Image 1: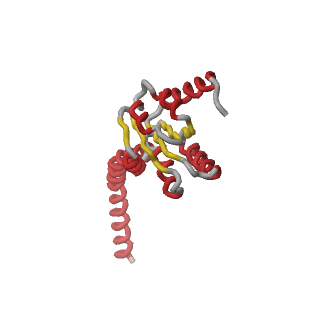
Image 2: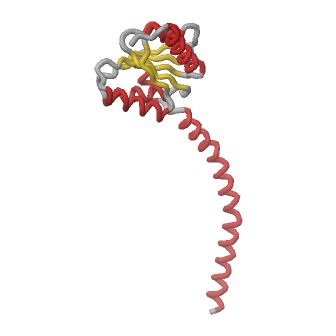
Length: 176
């Protein structure tokens, strides 16, 4: 069913608003995927916070015109599904992981703000840890010296108490 002019404008506006807060856009060809497969992909994308949509390429090209993802328009050929995410790694991870189990989903390319990638670049991006993983690693690294310092401070009274207990035990054994 064809969209009228107002509906097309609404779709372009929706995609433009998604791109405004996006850090990554990943594009894949979905030709031959079953409805069940696409439904599963959408479910995984929703769980990861990825906006996933099948779009006409002409509408997508109009939506990305003037954005940091404008260079991606050269890769917009054929029936494509677009993954847009505010986490630079999330969209790539969802589509690459899904493509591992479904050979009909073919990665075409992707883009970070101002940088266009091929399919290999998207696969490399998917292997990187997500923002949350990196933050948790950073927090663990920052907490390690503090935890070591606290254990060191705690060791002084502990050794003192152990020393007193040893002296007590020694005097008790001499008295008996």
